[in-house]
Amino acid sequence: MLTMKDIVREGDPVLRKVAEEVPLPASDEDKKTLQQMLEFLINSQDPEIAEKYQLRPGVGLAAPQIGISKRMIAVHVTDEQEQEYSLGLFNPKIISHSVELTHLENGEGCLSVDRDIPGIVPRYSRLTVKATTLEGEEITLRLRGLVSIVFQHEIDHLNGIMFYDRIEGFKDKLKQELPPL
Ligand code: K2U
Ligand code: NI
Image (cartoon, rainbow, N blue to C red; front, side, top):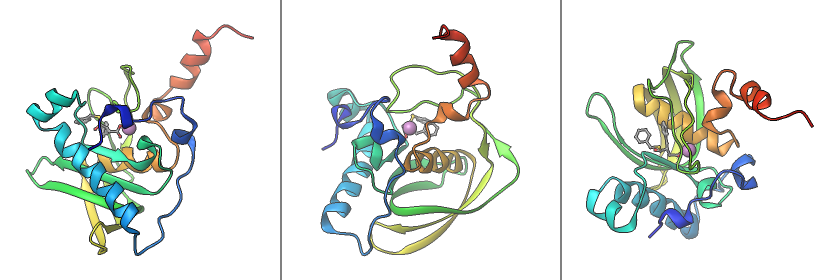
C-alpha cells in the first residue's frame, strides 16, 4: 500500500514536468498503480488506517506525486449534494469550463507541500472533463463545487502546476522576501 513516504515533496523536478499521456488500453502495471493511488485516498480518509500509517487525508492524488510522470489521477470525494466520486482516471482532459470562478474559503493544501500557504486559489466554478476509467470506459463528467476544484488541482499536477502558482501576488511576495542577488 502507498504511504506518505511514497509521496514526492515540492522541490522534486517531477512535480514541475508535464506528464505523459498513458497509452490505452492501459497496461496492467498502470492499472495497478492507479488502483493503489485510489486505495491511498480511501485509506487516508479512514481514521483508523490513517492513524496507524500516519496518512494525511487526501481527496485527490496525481501520479507525479508518487514520482510517476504519467497522466493518471485518483479522486475520492463526496460533493455538497452527497454525490460520491471514487475514481481512477487515465488522461483526464478539461474540455470546457465556466467563465465564473470559485475558490475554497481557507485556500488549498497539497500532499506534496509540507507547509501552510495561505491565499485564495481561483478555480473554474464548473468543469466538463473527459477521461478513461480504470475499467477502460471513456466518460464525460460535468462537475461543480468541491469536486470541480479537486479535479482542477489534480489536473494542474499533470501539467507541473502547484496550487500556490495560482495565488495572486504569491510569486511577487516571494521576490520581495528574497534579498536581491
Ligand atoms: O493533490 C493533492 O495534493 C491532494 C490534495 C488535493 C486538494 C487540495 C486542495 C483542494 C482540492 C484538492 C489533498 O486532498 S489536500 C487535503 C484536502 C482534504 C479535503 C478537502 C480539500 C483538501
Ligand atoms: Ni496537490
